Image (cartoon, rainbow, N blue to C red):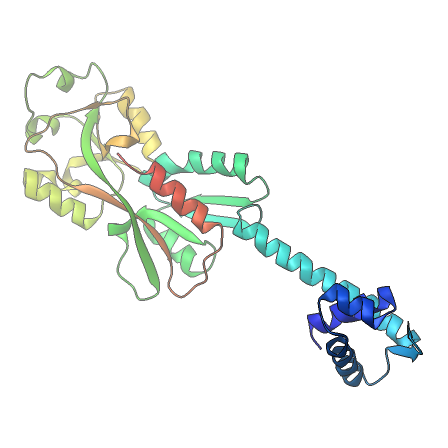
Length: 294
């Protein structure tokens, strides 16, 4: 049996007439008769008594009718639920965020969902790349927004670049370095505590190429934390210098270090290859592309 046949059954039971039901279903009467006959054959019993021009449902037909209505109702609800999910009005989104993207994207994402998609269940997880990737592989998360360079290439992961954002050295207003006239050398920055989130090997190589071996994060970073917001607070209230994407702390002063740092953070959307995307992921992707930019 099919949903179409069950809809034909319901229509005929409600109208009591093959001709009226066929007209309402935009079918020919012979087509509706064949559909009902095929359903009766599958059920093994008549569902309707044909009495002249009248059609009356049998006792067995009434029992089938009750269950058919429930099945069709559930099917319609399922289709409506899918539509709501496609439109972002229902469903769920479980996303993991790295320190940089999380500092910029987490609050806008939660605000967007609260205002425009209040029925959607949203969970944001913050952790290091290794733990987030493991949670993704275990289907505990739907997607990650992280530094794409920090993800080891793997056949089961799909990495989609969202944006590239420049990294800089920053300090508080009134910091001794902010009063320095002209360009700064890295050696001057090195005299103060340097704060940073964990950096990828590629970023570390870029720093060494620009400023020499002393610029490797393993040696020069003295304050390391996954939460960039905490580092920003420390830099605002101390002489520490922050190494991060410029947009993470617009109120801090960008230091004119020379040579100019060309290293950029590459933020990516990471999902499991071959896995069907939840409809809510389109909302996350669009918002991330809007927010994660210089």
